[in-house]
Amino acid sequence: MQEIEASELVAMLGSALVVDVREPDEFRSGHVEGAVSIPLSMVPLRMTELDHDQTYFVICEVGGRSAKACEFLEQQGFDVINVAGGTGYFRSNGLALISGD
Image (cartoon, rainbow, N blue to C red; front, side, top):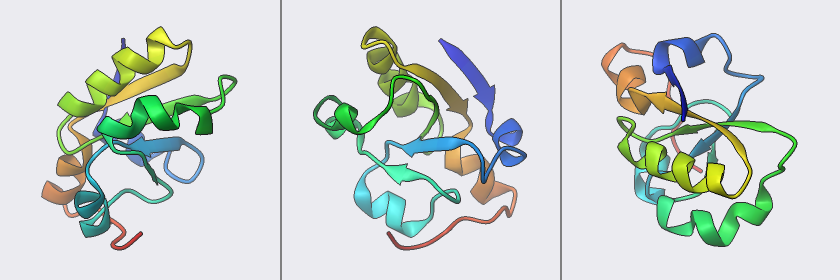
């Protein structure tokens, strides 16, 4: 599985396609700019919303749930990269998170 540190994602925000697999209340409380919410439990049902020709950066709070999502999505033929450190990195370093949907 491909993986980057959350600090590396910072420079790519705005152009990176980010999928946030946390629960909806976690997403609303603060997510990275441009992220799309697809909770981990919904990934198998909503993967049709993703394009096999794109690369997705998958994020959660720390990196565990996103790693699980990446493993599944890779098996389905998607190009995905796990974001180690997740939104927790952004929060603990005072980086901008967007509130709401």
